[in-house]
Structure formats: structure tokens, C-alpha cells
Amino acid sequence: MKNIHLNHALAAFTLTLSLGTQAAVPVDFSNLVEQVSPAVVSVNVKKTMSQQEMMQEQIPDIFRRFFGNQMMLPQQPVPREQNAYGSAFFISQDGYLLTNHHVVKDAAKVSITLDDRRELDAEVIGSDERTDVALLKVKGEHFPALKIGNVEWLKVGQPVLAIGSPFGFDYSASAGIVSAKSRTMSNETAVPFIQTDVALNPGNSGGPLFNGQGEVVGVNSRIFSGTGGYMGLSFSIPIDVAMDVVNQLKTTGKVTRPYLGVMLQDVDRNLSEAYQLDRPEGALIAQVAANSPAEQAGLKAGDIILGYNGQNLKRTSDLINLINRSQINQKVSLTILRANKRQEMNVTLRSAPDETPATKTEHTNNPTTKLGIALRELTPQEQARHNLQGIVVENVSYTGLAAQSGVQQYDVITQIGQKTIKNLNEFKQVMASLDKKGVVPIYLVRQGQPMILGLRLQ
Image (cartoon, rainbow, N blue to C red; front, side, top):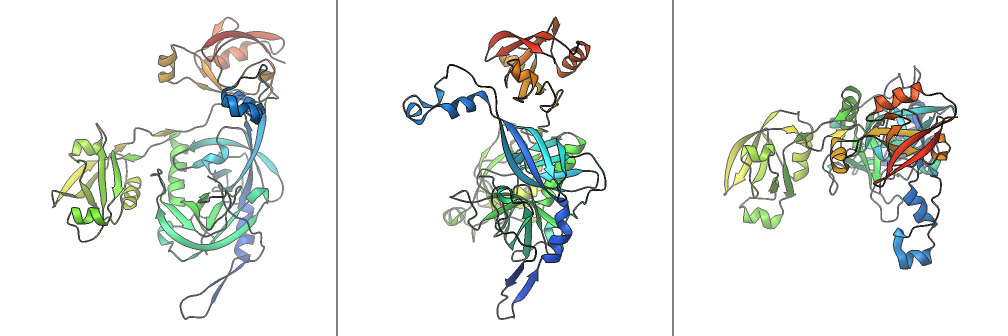
């Protein structure tokens, strides 16, 4: 569950740390909270429910028990919007903000609320699901940007502060200590999370984690919970990881990652004895991907990677973190154990095959406008799979003219009037040439079936 922190509102908070036999050391965050709060904002998100979600919501439990969620209702409802919320913070004075991918995922509209109660519309510049980082932009200048800290200087046991909007309660602050660094969570290999005991709850997602100097060291991302609420384990994305994603989204529109091409597991006590190691260490290769840098370098399943560019590896997460901090096309030296013998191997990292394009959708007509649709082009794979050309309706605002004309999410627009539509540029040109009054026929493919609707333009 990717819900996040900050439950305890306070203008002044004193955390007492007991340091062995020394006297208790009070940490007063009141001045820090006052200084940094203006740069933290609430994120308000409108998401359009799909037709399937709407229909499933309407199926009574008694029917769901017998027929499941696939039961079809006779009339399809008009898509409805949901409201969601989160947190974000300014990283530059010209209006760029950091938040989480899961906060703005599938958003039809995003806005932010400042500490002076102003509300501004925000554009999603780009978003990366794997690191859970998203970049927003609002119009304006001279915003209060936060100072970026150095995660390398952060130590386990140091006090940290979080500010956000748990359950919609704006500008709530909570504090704690760093519990662990470089925490790799199950099935997630792109982020070495900072673990803290800071109280985080739904709505804190995307908010900043501060060190004692008021510098941002993390982006609050998730909690580990069996109840959905705070249970003492909170996780933040290191700010250096987040800023790397931001810089890539701003400059190239996509995120690329170094790729070795191996499936790894930790070495436990039994494996260390089997491989005649003095103690459990390194990263054991369970599988090597075909045509990967690892395969081309000669790495094999059963090899244990003990060192990376001369740095010893205690566990798998150490190797993952070092790879993520490397560069595309960088040659690295690996110390491996094979057949009880250590040897050095050179590997040239490549771009990961799952490099993430920015999820920014070109809003030819944003859901806030009269037409109310967000569009994207078909990928080459989709074109080949369905033998189809056109553009995909990604989001539909239920208040827009498109929804009122019967256009639905995931429809593929292939023609408007007499003009064939193959890409977004052609859609723009056709819409610009139309009279802004009346109705125009629009040709669609919906779930593999062609159909024609009358699209009202006013």
C-alpha cells in the first residue's frame, strides 16, 4: 500500500533521544517547521473511474457472489470522477514540484493548494512508476523552493521530520529517527529506501523528509502496514534517486537505468557454507537474462558477486544500489566467486529494456476544457497487434462534451468527419479546421468493434 506519513500536527515538536548514559538531548523542530512549511503543498487529484469500475461498483453483493465482477449491467453509466489527495514540495522557484507517481497516476486533473490557501492547476511533466517519482509544474515564479540535502551524510539514528497532509489534514508534522538506509523492498529493485519510524498515513505520499538542518533527504512514499495505517515502518525515496529521475524527465522525457541482466538472491548461512565462504556475503546470481550485459560478459547462474569496482558487497541490495548509481555504457569490474575461486570480470552496463517513458499524456484537449479528453498515440506494438491506426482516449471527463457525446475511455479514434486520424498532430489539425459549432461524426473502435458517434462541438 503506497500511503504515506504524518499524523501528528504540531507547531513545535520536541523529540528526546536517549544516548546511552548521556543526558537526554532535546530536538526542537518548531523553527524548522515554520521555515519549510511554505514550500510544502497539498495535491488534489481528480481521477476518472473506468466504465468497468463503475459497473462493478453497482453490482449488488448478492449478485457478485454468484456471478462475480463480470456481470454486465444493461446501461453503461457516464464516467465519474474520484477525488484523491497527497503531498508535494517545490524544488525550484519557477514552479517545479516533486511528488509520488501513485499520487497522480491516472489523473484527469491535478491541482495544488499552497499554505496561503491559493489553488493552482498543475501539469504532470512526467512520472516514473518504478521509482514512484513524479514531476509537477505550476505557472508562476518566486515560489519557496526547498534545499536538497546529501543522503550520504544521513546516519541511522539521526532525527528526521516529515510534513504533509495525512487524511487531508494540511501541514501536519511528525518526527522520528532514521531506522535504516538502503532498504530494498520485495520485488522492487530500483529504490534503496530510507526507513524511518516517522508517523506517516494516507495523504502524506509525496511529501518531504527533512534532516535536522531543514534539507530534504527523501520523498515520503509508503508505509509497511497490515491495517492500512501507520504501524512504525515508513519508507522514503532518497532525494538523490528522485532528483536523478526528475532531471531525466525534464531533459529527455523518459527514465533510463543501468542494466546488468541478472536475477539475484542473498547468500544465507547454508549457501555460505556450500560456497566455502567465511560468512554470508555477496549477491548470488540465480538467473542470467538472455542477450544481457551479464551473459555477454560470461556471468553464469551460481556465480556470487562479491565486489563491484573494488567495493565489497555484504548483500544483494548493495549491488543493486551501486548499479543504480552507475551510468549507461559504463564498464564496471566485478569480483565473482566461481568454483570456489575468485576472479575479476569486466561488464559494460546497458540501458534497461524496461526504460520508462514519461507518463505525461499530451492533453490535446485537457479534461478541464469543453471537449474533456486526454489522448495518446498507439504504440507500434498496439498497431501491429490490432492492425489499427488511430489515437487512444486515455481519460474522459464526465462533464466534457466528449463524454456527453458517448466517447469512453480506451476508445480508439480513427476518423473525424472525412479525415483519417493516425496521430495527435493530425487530430490537432482536424480539430482546428472544424467549425466550433454543431456536431461532427467521429469514427471509433471500441473493444474491437467499429462504431460512429456524433461529437458535439459546443
